[in-house]
Length: 446
Image (cartoon, rainbow, N blue to C red; front, side):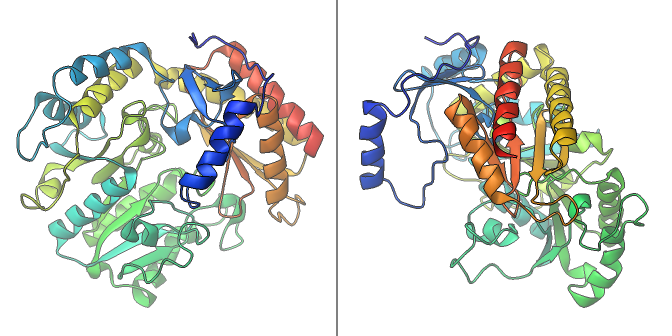
């Protein structure tokens, strides 16, 4: 069994077991279910993944921001076992159980703001976003929603509409949900207005004066939804005043501000939630991924008077807030607090950014290095002056990393971003090894 302290050990890549399962996947699994790493995982612990052929990899994708507290943390596994022996399911909307209420109470305590808050649970980030929008519409009685270019909010009809990247997420899936309006986000490296921060005067905020005339009247807008740090969009970290300016706009026009923290929450950015870096208190938050160490669970948390606008039966779902998932979430959050994983996330992120900035000095085709805490990315370009995206270089680096025992992922609307989401509990030795593997991949590619 893995201990979590292993180093990568690649010796039997693509052996017989993997080949057989790859053939079965091709035969029985729908083509639309992609898999960027051609392995089948047998077990995982901490920041180490072992495949069915005995190969060990350092995990730098963390289940796409899910395994913040590490693979199979013992306290969480024990909590899952204990709850599973008592109750697997009942549907909270028929027969209630304590873990749901205990988790709702905990989330109202750790999310930003000292106002009265309430929470509800479903299963995925997409479901959380859908329900948050329904709640905002119930509260305001308005039909429209503003989202942002580069954002990702899910693959259901509504969340696909909110999502910005066309291929692969939206292509040939229309028509889409009505009354969704897109505004440019604060993407300073690729500013829509060709401006340079901080001398720009925040054109992305000033744009709303025209936007509310040319696109949608503010009194028609129920909600504005934004990822404090864009995830699939390429880990875009906006200026602090951008989110603060959006908060002011929403206050001025009675719009519900929804922070989509599905990928950026739960210690990932060095704070429990990314909005904590921006001194912004959203009206509603959507949470998922890192909430329960891999058990399916998501949440909407926010101001009590807004959350209560949806009448009974209007939100929720059969499996929402499953008792085993709620128990896993409570244990995960307790683990994060006891082991101060926010501080550890900051330490891990500082080391990653330092290494990437060092590489950037040597390789100017690393156009940008950015991130908060251990939510870190670099953007690759063919020329640092033109900033033409280099999707091919990103793919080549990811492939070389995999071949040498490091699994990471791409991102960005142009596919030219490499993102790092290691479990926050990664050891210093594993982190150093991973960064060395990445450096070698960059040297071989750029």
